[in-house]
Image 1: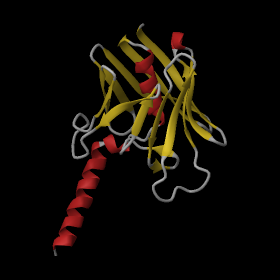
Image 2: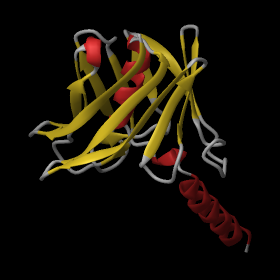
Image 3: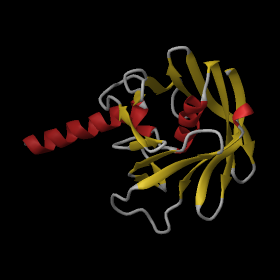
Image 4: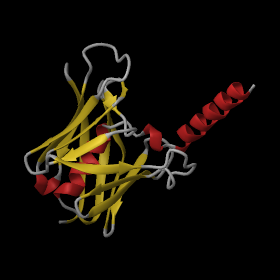
Amino acid sequence: MSDLTFELEPFENEAHKGFRGTAGPYGEVMAYHIKPVAPNRGKIVLRSQLVSEHLPEAHLDAIGAGGKPSVYQATLEIDGTPAKLRYNSYGLTRAARALHITYADRAYTYRYTTSLHANIELSRPGLRITTKDGRRVKKVGVCRDVSAQGVVDELDLALAVLFEVVSTEPLVPVVAALYASDRASANRVGSE
């Protein structure tokens, strides 16, 4: 299918927090992270999960904060098969810090197109899926507007929707600058 637009609406209940919506002919989609039952102390592995009748089963496991797993040292599985994730933690631009996802015969790039979480793009040759902030839902949060340009399929949408409930802060260049500053300070202290 080519070109698709839909909205993901935030939701929260006792056990989950995430987004749900109708992805055109692919039907209902829901992505969430499981809320921790206790404060997150230490390196607890957290999970983000995609649930949909017509999209492949996908989940991402990693450490994180507030119940939301991070792309840092994450593992991604799609229909029980691992995908490869990598990014340059030393990159100082959005393009340099992009997350590269390899699954089966496909290679994707996931990156911020503006600062912070405002606009994000998942792309592969012939396809670009962008997500951006949409309308506000009282007491729940902000919707995410999803727009696909090019020929889109189930795998493309599964990745785009799943990553809406994953902490992608390590991909933000400002974070790289902060980490670089911390590393420089640690090296100075250690060399005295």
